[in-house]
Amino acid sequence: MDRDRVKQILKFFRDIDAQIAHNAQLINIMEDTFYSLNGSGEIDGQPRAKNKISCPTEATALSVPSYASETLREWRDENEALCKLKAAISREIGRLPHLQRVIVYDFYVHGCKWQDVSQAINYTPRHCKNIRNRALDSLSRLFAGNTLIVTHKY
Image 1 (tube, rainbow, N blue to C red):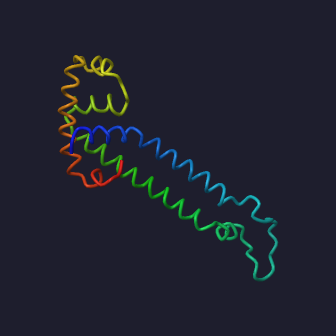
Image 2: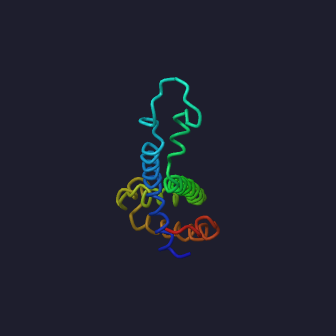
Image 3: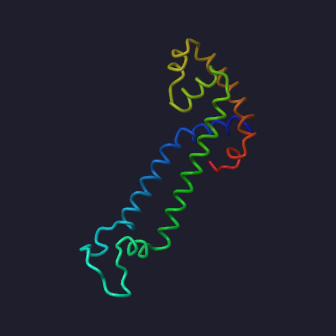
């Protein structure tokens, strides 16, 4: 795996939380739309006649279109996959030496500028870039050995 691919993965890693939050928001909106008990019938506690659905929850569940259920399932699956991917990338970054890990997190994940990164660790920006290059080389080997990271489409 080359450095550009590692940089692409690290930039994607920075946005995983936002994607998960966005999907969760869409899931909540869709659940509120289709699984809301408001307006699903009068709830007065009185028994109903035969062959009628008496439970508002059952009525709501039966009225949900199949496309909505499939879409919700897809978004939940995507969120689960993104959580696993985030954990895998984080685990591989965690295997780096401390200084490399700090530089990768500060520059790629937190979006700091080189001047800020170098001041935080008391190195020159050029030295930080050299350490970053070694970290990218190490991550390329680590990422290449992880099938979850290699097979995901970024």
